[in-house]
View 1: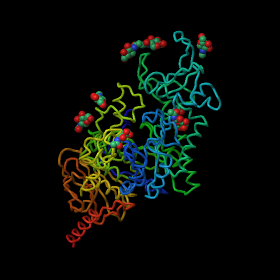
View 2: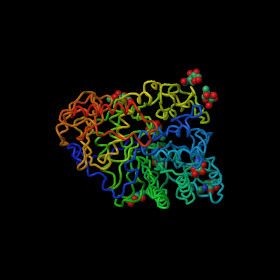
View 3: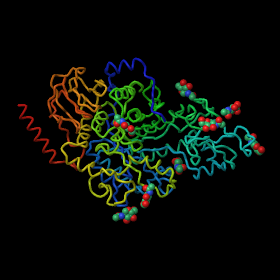
Length: 622
Ligand SMILES: *[C@@H]1O[C@H](CO)[C@@H](O)[C@H](O)[C@H]1NC(C)=O
Ligand SMILES: *[C@@H]1O[C@H](CO)[C@@H](O)[C@H](O)[C@H]1NC(C)=O
Ligand SMILES: *[C@@H]1O[C@H](CO)[C@@H](O)[C@H](O)[C@H]1NC(C)=O
Ligand SMILES: *[C@@H]1O[C@H](CO)[C@@H](O)[C@H](O)[C@H]1NC(C)=O
Ligand SMILES: *[C@@H]1O[C@H](CO)[C@@H](O)[C@H](O)[C@H]1NC(C)=O
Ligand SMILES: *[C@@H]1O[C@H](CO)[C@@H](O)[C@H](O)[C@H]1NC(C)=O
Ligand SMILES: *[C@@H]1O[C@H](CO)[C@@H](O)[C@H](O)[C@H]1NC(C)=O
Ligand SMILES: *[C@@H]1O[C@H](CO)[C@@H](O)[C@H](O)[C@H]1NC(C)=O
């Protein structure tokens, strides 16, 4: 899956070069729902907190940390898949029961308690669901092989083309489709005398998502969780759910010799993001809407994770504002930006989403997830605050991955070769490292400097704790007057400002390395964010924004020279390497945000310090 490289039309270049403002953001939206302005905090439950000392995170651990999550000020908790898996809970195995919780994480009661407690803290819960390809050992598949009704057509079965002379009487596959792992996507079943489709491994036959029983099953699962109080779903990897029902051959991308079975040699127009997938997604959203309508009329959220190529189609048909999902998860920051990206690349990633997004639909931004390298490692540990500013202050839903608020980094997995969670996975030594490297952003949350970073009382944890936990942990960052955690929390709180909720966006790359953008709303204070992606100190002139001569620092990155409420000359702002700052035309000391939803972790000292600080400012000003 290549990073998207959409063609760049001339006008886009012009737009970028001139740094013109964007169209008014979707403020014009007739009805706003809670998720429009929400921050969604993604938690990987196996690595959040271990409540019973077995070295593995669990749902009770998540419950224990709900006060922390609520205090961050985020609106929703998104749980990475919690369902019961095959192979004795191997995290690499497929889900076997979407209505049951993995025993290693807890019980059905724990899950209900989590949902109840979250509600008490004002947090909504969103579940990740990977609509799965089933296992070959699955009872449904076994019955399907034997053509037992109603299982006969639950999988994609096809006759072969013709007998080839040299293949023991086995016919040729129905068409040229290839498996993601290479080789034909079709496997001959001698008992049924037909081929079954497997877009992934031969052990994972694809469900026939055109069959009403498969469709109903997924709808039942969604309803099951909605009734338990879940506020929405993130459907993962939907690109592969359906295939062309005419089973056309796919076009070859380049002249390949006849033995080549490389997945990238075909255009996947008939197996990837086929049109009917968007209708399937729409039926899910309709189910959520109907449920909301029948109950409390609070909208439920449907997010779709799909490959970037056709991602906008998941917003639904372009003209209408219905259809599709609420939004496809925006992977542009993840797919398009690297440690080598400059201000123009960032500006372009933001513009691209707005330009290709259908009118009247809602943007969203994602910096990290358990499936990708952590932003501090992928981009730079020095840019953590600046990137969080981008995530939180652009118009749209913000998707943040737990741990990014303290700048956690990827964990080296080289010497990690044993774990009870992987015991049942039967991973071969040769692919162990390849598989385990996927987990480098999923290691335990770093709460403090104690045993196993405060994640577990057990010295041995299911994944290794990052060795930097004594210097990178929440406890230290809460104690410090200035830290990634404090910046993050302030940015989340800023989203209560009307300007950030519905103000206009204008973005300018002021040089190769300096990105800036403003949020403004009539009769309200303007906020301008400036990020220096370069290794040199720069002097920035905010002329394009028509600001008063003197502006105040609202929030500054940890590595910035500035502190809150510093007065700066809007045409002469000096930014240290990789530092960032939000300035405002308002009076910075007025932005003392309330302390989140709950005050369980109310920090008296800091609050007191802030009040003293405010007092001293008042003295200076008057
Ligand atoms: C650590 O976890 C393992 C596996 O669950 C368990 O056998 C062991 O007793 C635990 N150690 C402590 C000190 O709790
Ligand atoms: C896949 O999903 C189906 C339908 O919910 C389920 O019954 C099955 O057990 C799942 N997992 C596997 C590995 O087949
Ligand atoms: C393939 O050949 C076998 C035996 O030669 C025959 O029984 C079978 O019907 C043939 N299948 C097709 C699809 O031609
Ligand atoms: C590929 O197959 C075609 C038709 O079967 C044949 O004409 C051609 O020579 C083959 N090419 C190679 C490189 O094997
Ligand atoms: C096909 O191409 C691969 C690599 O390009 C080469 O190694 C192989 O020998 C080729 N096979 C045939 C049958 O031409
Ligand atoms: C998918 O739908 C679009 C728009 O309706 C249409 O242009 C396109 O041909 C369709 N693609 C396929 C493979 O049917
Ligand atoms: C970016 O990362 C790559 C490898 O991950 C490294 O080789 C390269 O030097 C880095 N570039 C910068 C500018 O840090
Ligand atoms: C795997 O672990 C064992 C002990 O647990 C150790 O002796 C061995 O060196 C490790 N191997 C690798 C490749 O890290």
